[in-house]
Length: 261
Image (tube, rainbow, N blue to C red):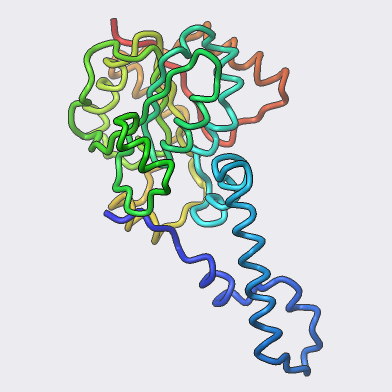
């Protein structure tokens, strides 16, 4: 399956949203040269947003949201300082599972005393140089999470999953979620979209094979009880306190679960 995003140039050209075009007189007919200059300028602005901060922070996040709607993987990037406060030493060896895992792994690796690994559940046809390097080193793996994970029990202190479980039917969710808990020693963090959040439906079908099934908080809580997964109340309290101090309001649902011992 291809994970190519929609063409940014096509978005500007087809949408008629080239900056400053609305300021032209409706009866005037700009020369082709003027149109080309404006289009190139718009593309340079988008390119700058993507390339700033190494292409992995605010610029990339802005481009991801522009192309694919709400992204819980970009939410993980914002929540890293909060997670550090809540989990402390449990952040020393982290596995991230989900799209854009190369970006998340790169950011986690910048944290002191944090070793980060990743699983990309979908193809990496459009991977950048940094992502290809992580895959070559074995830091990031491409693996179908509907099957057993290639790790031993308690291989990681913490497992974080985003933008992956929303695309699984209950049949596969019943297999994947216990696997994620199995390979985590100290906890499992789930980032899931809120029902009603905008998604790029066409892009979803090409990347994931099916549209996201965004479930309510009450649905998840009932599911955790049914599958004997327990929420970690002490970590939840620490996470909420750290969020309040930093005025952080999550854009996705965040669940903190205990690992299977």
